Length: 263
Image 1: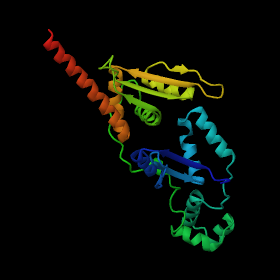
Image 2: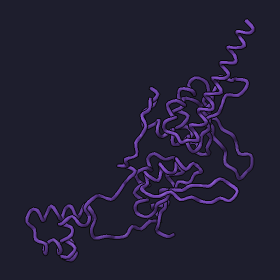
Image 3: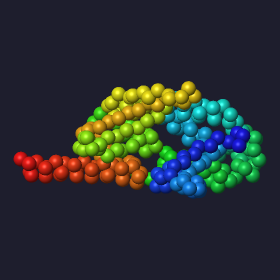
Image 4: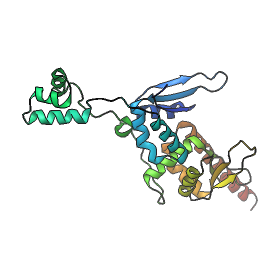
């Protein structure tokens, strides 16, 4: 649709999309994918979508920022004579003694528009930004000492979409892993810094493909970070974490049993 920017989150994890929809202030839509898993979406558009894009732009990578800038460039907001800020100014001037007729002339509207403003019937609150004032309860987490709570939340959001919480390999049964990959070098470098690892590059296999950047954290630090991230993740990711923890515990128990049997 022309002049109608859209923000959309689509995933197969319904619980994650429901949390996003609450922050968006919208509903969840189920999309039938036939023989594939059902996809869920939370979407909103127009002026509120533009406001949301402006709020989250500093948190995004270069590619997403370019997409947001392109949406801004194609958007022509509807020109309005009044908004909440102007209505507040009208109410302030009226409280100081200015007449309805003079206010109507000053702001270029009819007197019938001024009356409901003074009665708080219209323009009585700032534009809704539920992602800023949502009553969604955030879980309490133990943030690792090397990052801030905001960075931990950012990392959780990125790993929710791009990461995997992998069970230990048979060769290293007590070595759980956190891995992720994306083609956005700047984003992966930020994630690598927070995970305290070096990003790796997998070059494109075909000329028209993009290179893939990867991060991998394993061992004790991976276990500690998993525990910090778990409360912020969706059901599927938490199940991955629990599966990896269970595998590590079982491997430790087997090793202990073997040591007892073969001292």
